Length: 170
Image (cartoon, rainbow, N blue to C red; front, side):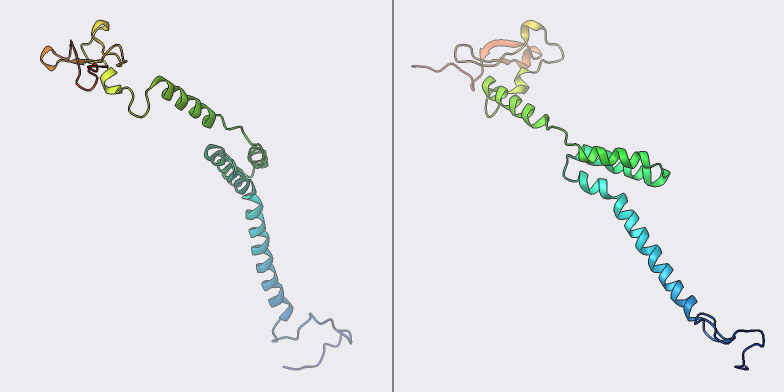
């Protein structure tokens, strides 16, 4: 090709104007720049979008799952109100009510003798034909447990079980 300039062209052309048949360097640089920018901004967007979920990992499981669902809903619906709700929910620390309640329940079970070798709950469960008079009761030092008699259809015999028999000689 002829390297002569067109007669109507100015003497000094900018660097981004290429001669016919030459590689457009600026176009190639801009393609690489735009791909990198799209990937960088997309990564930043997803990192920002997952921010409430990362905050919620310090909370309990139910709260974390609710925040994750709100983040996914906001991602797919493009409704930012869900993301804001998830962020606020992740920032709020709900008090732990279950641990003290479980501790109180455990202490009450220990006081009632139902934990660690206390009352056998299967002996306390009524049979299908049990009446209120035939229900077994937990053993105490002055009242032994009454064993159900399999020959009488599960009704009690009034005899103490060997495990809860009254102690002799004390």
